[in-house]
Length: 117
Length: 122
Image (cartoon, each protein chain N blue to C red):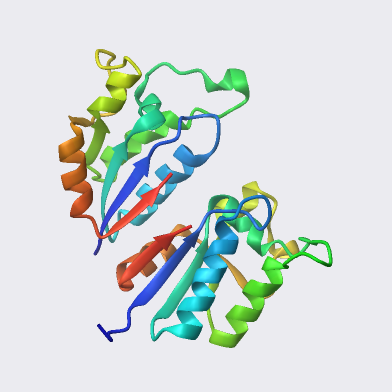
C-alpha cells in the first residue's frame, strides 16, 4: 500500500488526460491509498451540466462519481485555482474539499507517489 | 547511501513528437548501466502506448526509440508493459505490437507502484 496522489491540472475535453487520470485513480485504489487533487485548469472538471457530446466527446465527467464508490474520499480542489477561474461560488458536481495552497503543499508532502495529468 | 532502490517508470509521451519518452529511455539506461538500482516495470500509458507500435519507422538518421526500448529490455530482462485500454483506443493491438512489449491492465501498474521504492512519471 502506497500513498498515491493523482494531480489533475489539465482541463476536461481538450485532451484525454483527465479521463486517463480517473482510470488510474480507480484502478490503483484497490491496493493503494489514493488522493485526487484538482488544480489549475483541472478545476473545470468540477462544473456540472457539461455537454461534451457537442464536441464529439464522451461525458466521462459523470464517471468521477465512481470515486466515492471506490472509497476514494480524499478529493481536493485548490482554492486559489478556483479563484483564478472565478469559480468559487459555483456548485461542484463531485464531493471535494476546498483547500488553500499551504494545505495543498502539506498534503503533497506526505505522498509517496505523485502522478500528474 | 549505497542502498539500491527498485523503480517503476510510467511513460506517457509518444515515440515521436515530444521529448518525454526519449528522456525516460535515457533515464532508464543510465539507471541500469551506472547505478545499482533496478527497474521492476516500465509501464506505458496514455500516448506512451505508441512506444509499442512496431510500425513506427523513423528516418535512417534518427534515433529509433522503439528498437532502443527492445534492446534495453533484452539486455536487462525488463518488462515493457502497455495499458491495453489506452492502447486499443490508439490502435496499438496484438497485430502491431512490437516484440518485448506486453499488453496488460492498470492493475499491473498498481501492483508495481506498491511493490517498488520509487515511481517516476515521464
